Amino acid sequence: MGGCGKTQLVSYFLQEYPNLYAQIVYVDASSSSSIKSDFQSWARTLGGGHERDAWEDTLRTLNNVTQEEQWVLVLDNADDPTSDLIPFLPKNIYVTILITSRNRNLGNLSTTSHLEPGEMDADEAMAVILQAARRQLPLSNQEMRDARDLLKELGCLAVALVRAGTYCFQLSSTVGGVLRPYTFSQYLSLFNLHRAGLMKKEGPTSLDSYQRGVYTTLDLSYKALPQESRELLHLISFFHHTDIPLAAFAEAARNAFNDPGYYLPRPDDHQAIISKLGHVLCTNTGWNELRAQGLIHNLRSFSLVTASSMNDQLFLQIHPLIQAWSRDMDSISSQLYQAMAIQVLTACGSEKNFELNRFLLPHV
Image (cartoon, rainbow, N blue to C red):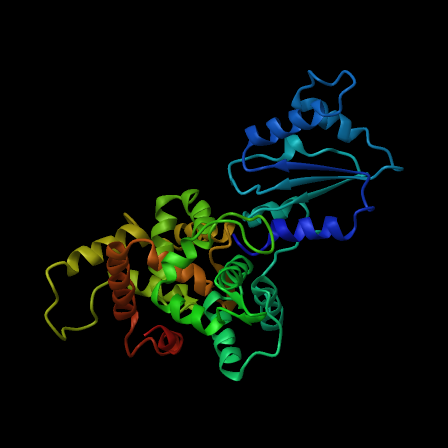
């Protein structure tokens, strides 16, 4: 997931163990061209006749590292699912390769050494936001409650926590030697009123030089998604963020997204909502679970959703902050996707689907 601290984790690891590797080769892996450019630049810094080296020379150098040296190659931000990293990986057991990516499929390159960072637990998140805000425990009872509420709103996402703490630090002051902090209670109130504005805010943080805002970080993943997967993301963001049953979409599609009965007159644009659902979730022949799972696979590739199975049913989860970001992206489109989500729940619910109905309650 974007913003969970992958790059920072690698950076802190290398700082914590400065003598572990004789040489660190750090590369921007956001594209093949950036890898080649950084490889070439690194090779030419060696001097002594290397001033005209090409990117391939770095790969040759890495493949010649001996057991006595031990180097590390860091391929950072390898997020593009269309980029092939294989040509840039040295085949040398004395070179450790560290790859950071939002593309979880890259974990297949190393099935034994693949770490997928999740959200922090509450204690870790509290420690991060306190450090970023330059605050120390104990806090007042009210501010402690508000701080915990803020952690829930931010979903314990590293970049959001650091941004929030930095904001509080920047608005704090010292008067007569006494700290007058901008409290977490104040930030929570501001967040509830101006969530999108705060999450888009960019600039260096108080803990590191990371410049991007929370929403900007997520936007990078969004731009790489196919349009159909974007639309599915917007749709599921209007369900509760946990345990979204794929069976609900399948059942609604089998019912052609129609109401199970006539209750109240529908507005003029109701048929357009049904048509849009068919476009997003179906093919010409109707519901196609393989296609739906392909769209979900795209979202999972960037860790925008997760999936789990229970009793032979597939359920989706979406991080609360990703849910908020998706909703905040476009207020007009959000109204459409909200109406679509409501129609899915309407079309799949009936007395005959008792088993499915049990899973729908949190989403109603």
